[in-house]
Length: 136
Picture 1 (cartoon, rainbow, N blue to C red):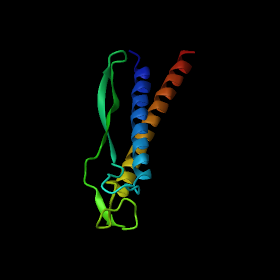
Picture 2: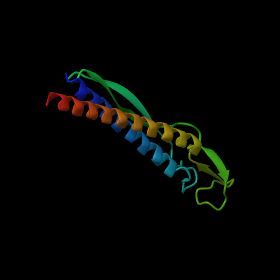
Picture 3: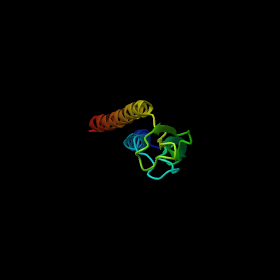
Picture 4: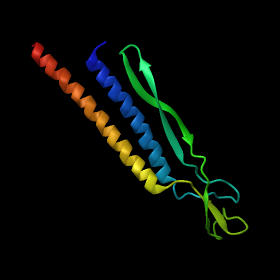
């Protein structure tokens, strides 16, 4: 049970998890303005990410992993756009339940968590290098 190996494994699991979170947020932002193309159809539905912990007995540490990528079941809003092919008989079109401001805040948090994990990975690497230098 090498503590320096544990640092790398923990940081790597955090990097993978936050990378997936950033990917999901980017997908949400990219689809924030998509609309249904046929009347009555639903537009893009916001995706969410949930994390879980997993004990890795080989290194004696708890790692983070993606539990699931789900869908936000919140209500869609409607906008008046009678010229759109997805408009209903009243000229209303459903728009995604994506709030760009919320997504950007989530992106910033995920990016900072990713950076913190990267710093931890680099710190572990430097510690290993210093230990090897001392053993020479």
